[in-house]
Length: 77
Image 1 (cartoon, rainbow, N blue to C red):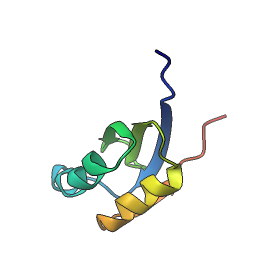
Image 2 (cartoon, rainbow, N blue to C red):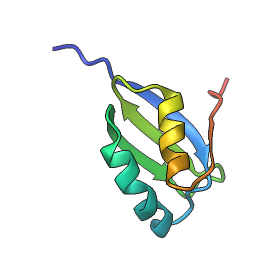
Image 3 (cartoon, rainbow, N blue to C red):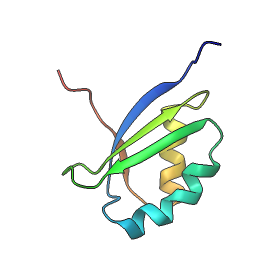
Image 4 (cartoon, helix red, strand yellow):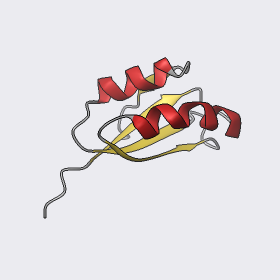
């Protein structure tokens, strides 16, 4: 069976365990989000999402509903 998963990365202000705990129920319940994590050691607080059938815009809306700032991260050249 072929996987249609895509990987998206975003710059956020999710910067600690408490923030991750706050956003967790939103991302865990978002339909199409398969797996996610936040690199809080990165200055951009990079949120990486493995998703299938959900748009980057929908992921952004989900994180904003949780009360956090989020922007698409431009791929490194």
